[in-house]
Amino acid sequence: MFARWGGLCCYCDRPAEHLDHVTPISKGGGDVLSNVVPACADCNLSKAALTLAEWAATF
Ligand SMILES: [Zn+2]
Image (tube, rainbow, N blue to C red):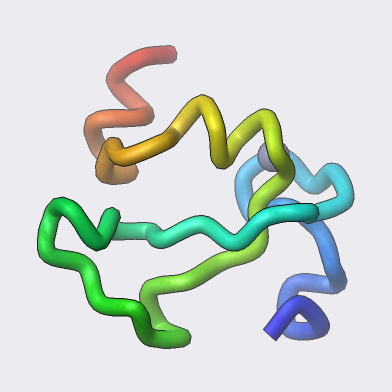
């Protein structure tokens, strides 16, 4: 899974240390590969339980 992204955060291309749920479990996202991407700690903690659209709106 990490190899698919070259071991990099899918949001900012720094080395990924976390796995992020694209659609948070708490918002109805599944715990499945298609909903999981590698993310660095900064991005994962910043995004937290937001959806991509909600997170993008914070920039
Ligand atoms: Zn990142």
